[in-house]
Image (cartoon, rainbow, N blue to C red):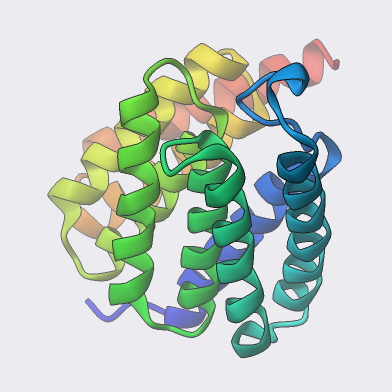
Length: 210
């Protein structure tokens, strides 16, 4: 089945905006402030400013202009924090999303996997890791690799449920990804089970608004 490439691009770029906008509000590093030198702090501040510009360009689909800036953010964060820091992984995943916008899915998947490896090595519950897993699920879905797509989506659901709770908007995003995969794979029973779960979550949310 041929997938709608614009739909994939829109889905992943929208996820980029959601997670990166949240990150832009709190430019903290894995290292605590007293561990950072003045030079490191300056590099991270510069990276934050450039990253905001990346988001602006992504929003208006100027992906070619955004890519070199996203690469600069990676270099700045890597120099300040080291290759294995969560902020470096986030910057790599942002670059991957831009390549999705350019419809260069091979490069996008390579970068998402780089980011995922960093998160896995860090261990624990890494918030941005759910976005990376969702994006990899969508990319595998786009190539009709439903087995890998399902595995990525289930990992995202498990992570987000632990991080955000059983009725969170973040979890609903990942459930919708898995529903899409089940639908394309012809797994109607699993899809319907998830739909029932999703409807129950939405009804609970209406009865108990935050």
